[in-house]
Image (cartoon, rainbow, N blue to C red; front, top):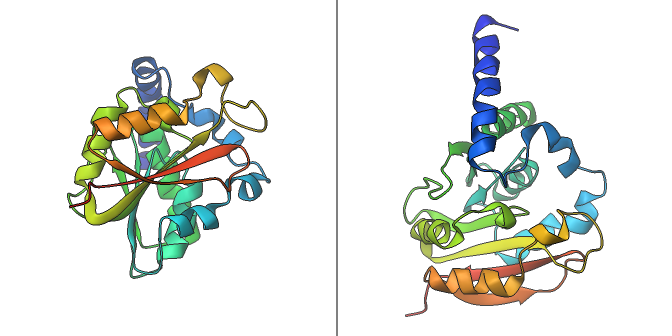
Length: 215
């Protein structure tokens, strides 16, 4: 390990407790392995989620609360060299993990973004789609965050929110941490978004798709 890498790692370790204390709901970086079980591809169905949001070659998309980048990598492969993925998280350790993963995959269409709890810091009017996968229940002020995500959408852009149902089966956080989809809809409408579709193809989760108000 180089001196620069060692210094960066030391800084991340110092920052981690402070971030965790400030945002108690956040998933801990040291537990990232729990998010990437061998069966996740089967129950998460990333290809169908991307299809539902019309993500294709050349799309510009954002992965919000990207964690270790599991979905980021799949988005990057889908949009190809002419597309772009913004991988956003508010924990520096997650950004560091994604950067390493992207380099290891040899991808050049991913830009990591260190956002805040209220603002993902994405360019205005840039996105064809934004995804919040398995992270909505961690958001402290979802209406404010969704307003800021909406500013980053193109006029036809979509936001897809995927999170765990309260039925209690399968993976996911404790039942008391899960967010009812109707609350998500209310939050999104308060943020000025319109519900476009509810998708029912996920076994343990719901997928809600929102867009900007129709004119």
